[in-house]
Length: 443
Image 1 (cartoon, rainbow, N blue to C red):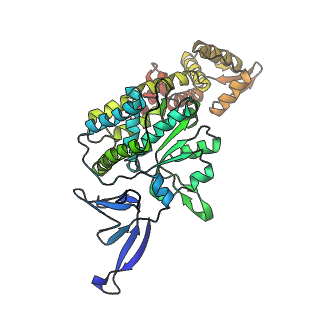
Image 2: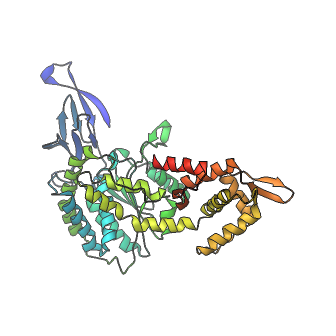
């Protein structure tokens, strides 16, 4: 946003009206400014001013003491980004959600759960600036061409969509941030530097260093097409993950004419959804306590996208259940979790003063084997894991061991809460640390 002053001839030569260059914002009195397409769809974009009841459209709009003007955007950027020509009624939130879900089912032949999650992501892009963390979507599958079809369809309905391929960290930082893009990335290989940037840009307020002492804010929704399922894990928890196969995702006649028709039908309805719901977005009263920690924030975010319909918010959250179950299955084979579970049993058993690291390694490997893990950890590797978990080891004549004392118990109970393990739901009798855990979970 850029501000400058202009003379207002009605008030004399010295009177100034503030002129602000804007690509869209929510003003302090609740009025909203949004970018819309030019009259021909190819001209310079215009601004739409929404006062809560009516919309005014022009190359510049006035509100209070300010005049707002469209930024100068590169013609190639204007051509690459779809904008709504106007706003129009979307009906009820439920009917609108069903219509968007059907769109993905019709053109991509996806199952209902996947189509519904894509609908959730699409709606979330229009409210991203009102959410505590931004929705991130990962689409994986063996056929890149079919995955690109999914990105094309998303480009018709997401807010300020921009399709890019094989983005580098430097290219990512150079994007014009005032546009608040929804990035649709064909990124078949996610290298570590890009992984870190994508994770950081999920959260509001995390700026990145730019050129010449500047700061870059890359917060915004992203859909990432990757070649394999592992990409979802590299981005950390809390992403919507949809795995598609050729038998599910059939190449359809998504030519440019059909894409334009879809955009012209849905973009104005999405814009009205944003205009009417942005000020209503708040923490939804949906119970997400049954989800793992990694999924819980994503569930809250999805629920907040439906402020008009609490039942729809609950249904959207339930779409994450299968994904959360997979997270639980993966966590059950995590060596850190296995160590904590074994020590949890040991500190409550109190049958011995301490547990030797080599004996702990045997118990951990046995537990992991029972859950389908084939890799075995040495006592030395378990020792390093204990160090990273901040669990103290002590040496005596028999070797290294973990003393089952109060400090260890407190650390284990803290880790049980941090890793959100099932044993956190059980309170052992006469254990003061269990009582503290129960109290903390109740808050």
